Image 1 (cartoon, helix red, strand yellow):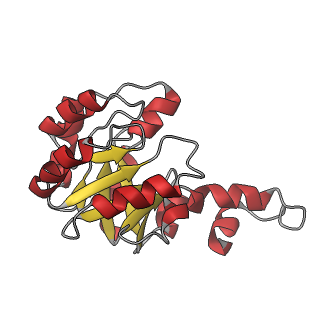
Image 2: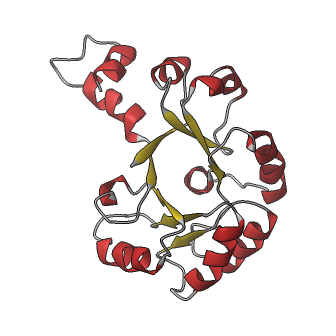
Image 3: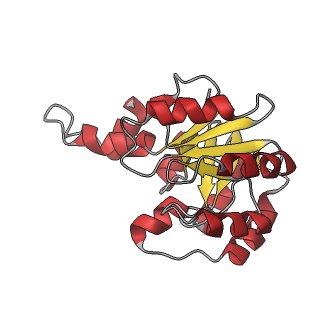
Length: 201
């Protein structure tokens, strides 16, 4: 199981992510990360659709596509721009432009049959995603994974809680940089810097 850490938000985080797999998000990418990208062991490219949804941003699929071109020689895979709010027709149009597809629990189940050929064309990757809240959806996750052919690499978007399910090959996680903030407010650890808490985590 490979866990891609979400894009570092600071040089301290980037330094701690050295030799680790990192997810670069178009919606959150900062140019200073160019100085660190060679230090990461692997890179996965994401549109940042979830970040855009939660922050009220819009992502232009053609701008995203242009940005992804620079990562082709370096990235394990490039995800398509999907519509997390359940507009699967919009997602399909975006997949025509670039990136591997993702099936969501908000999509009609039969959509998976259309996404499998797209996944094979895009390097053999397919995503599985849940619209928050993500808890209590293991039945859907397992049923969906059972329908995905073994020759496809399955990436679970923020599905670290479901890594015990067979067929999830990789996931992404933001907890690696969020958890140190929680540690800093602990009464016995409040004297530590963020960097020290990150080191502990």
